[in-house]
Length: 173
Image 1 (tube, rainbow, N blue to C red):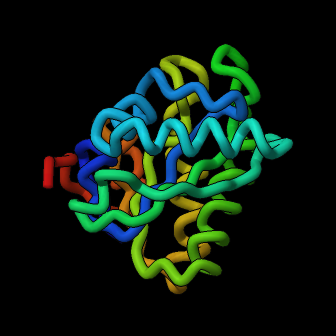
Image 2: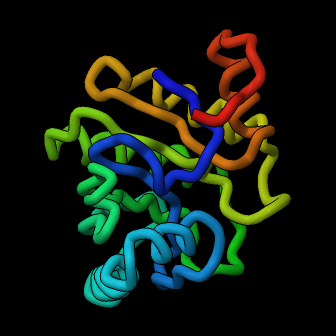
């Protein structure tokens, strides 16, 4: 498992996993960066999926990666952690969404994947709890799929490294 401080849109992985709300709005945080780097095609595809399906909290769906293909990223997996952008997030829903996304990527034959911090929105959840949950879920699946945890939040990345016994402070790749 590799831990990287940096943007998820430079994953150097076949696919990425990010959190999303079930209304399909992609105007903040990691999702905004994906739309910017992956092009509007990604946002349109996400909106099409959320309008055509009755998504529940913890569900997973995937889309094409748009222009991220030029960075060798071919698929984006979305874990539904909120119904609407202003809803609160629970650790139980994050665990379910992350697990479902990893399982789907494994079923799809993805060999390596990058995962971002699933705590969307500042101050919503304890960053240490989200870090621990992320590490626990990744350790369950790392024998089936190569995993990178990539995020721009230095506190999250340092917590993940600490939990994995990596003593060095985070650095950019």
